[in-house]
Image 1 (spheres, one colour):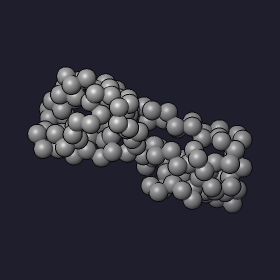
Image 2 (tube, one colour):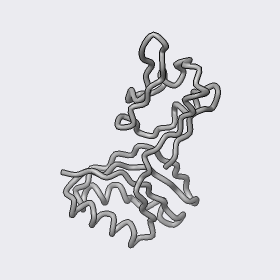
Image 3 (spheres, one colour):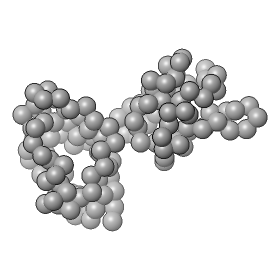
Length: 135
């Protein structure tokens, strides 16, 4: 079993189609929606993690492209201005997967990128706006 994180961009005419259900039922792809912004009649975006057989993931991606969905590899990146961080811990309080934590006597902020799901809660929580999510 393999996994792949991708950003899906849906044109307005595709937003209302049951693409996730089709990927699960027809392609046997586990689809974990990590972040989404989808509104009726507008362009929609979703960050998803696809899990399944490599060939079936490729087939599902081909299906998405055929119906007009743009599929891009997710750039798993968080920009954190560590030099300006005051280690207040506000971001750690909202980090559900535990990707952000304070360590040591200095309470230094550490980011575990492997745990990060790019939810963006830390971005909103940072009082100095030092965290940016890029995907």
